[in-house]
Image (cartoon, rainbow, N blue to C red; front, side, top):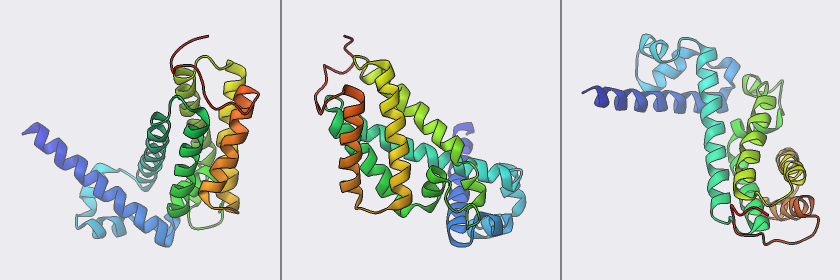
Length: 205
């Protein structure tokens, strides 16, 4: 019974976060009211406040969920190509650019764009999102490609995250084309050449 209640509560939280996402994307988080979220899901405001004691708590939960979803997708893209650095970076960047193109919250969190626009609550957290993304990708790269020089590897990760955020803002080229260019740059930063293949993942020099 306890497990059933926990499952129901998890599903309720997800429905509430979905409603908050849709409301924030449509009217802006600052204009979103807790009553809007409760009404959209068909629950009382008391039920909503039981899960999220304040609007700020709701916004924080939404921020973390969207960022975690993005990072999970990045990891899955990297996992599919552990022996090919260029292909792995290209896939991860392409995923991120495509996601940001259709998810205004991710775009706002990665770039900080629109401080005066519809999502100021989340754009204000862009620095935190940037730091978390850099740390997560850096930890993954250190574990997966330990043979790469640590200084070059850290610089390559920082370059990848910054260039990806920049391309999200500019959106000057299709995601695939931008991803290829960023991957070329990251490989050169990491390895000092255009080499794509690396030693067996996890192997140390």
